[in-house]
Length: 193
Picture 1 (cartoon, rainbow, N blue to C red):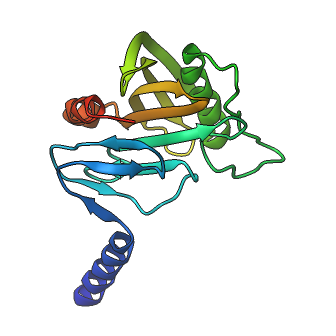
Picture 2 (picture 1 turned 180 degrees about the horizontal axis):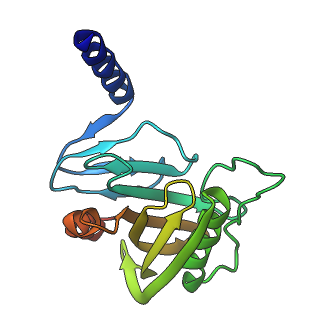
């Protein structure tokens, strides 16, 4: 019986990992099917899951433990994520007159609708550069209704030529956020367009 359970778990693990790809250290272009590039100094895993046509997900330990989401060149009129229920829970969209200070609010309203987030707080906000473009760096905390895990996040975003570029890091508040946030910051410092 133990052999059957072990074999089943191994097959499940292998099948879920087959679609993912290892991101090796060094230059990586075309992130999220955009002009965005980065140069990671360590290995990451690119998840095969597609949250939207302009989204790419990387993780170190699994997306529920730490995740970097790249939103590459989201055009005006489009939401950050693929909409699950357009009729009953439409997502906010990138607008032509969007200010950099609107980027954290766009993420918050997207999460509240898409993920049933009932507790979310945008904390620190400060001017920053994303690949040499004027942008915003911000931190946030949220809890999803489905798992009640308190998560922290940090993001950097900018509007460039009418498109939104946003990179966020999220992990559970306990242990995982602090464990890998410096790796995210190093990665974010290498972003180029």
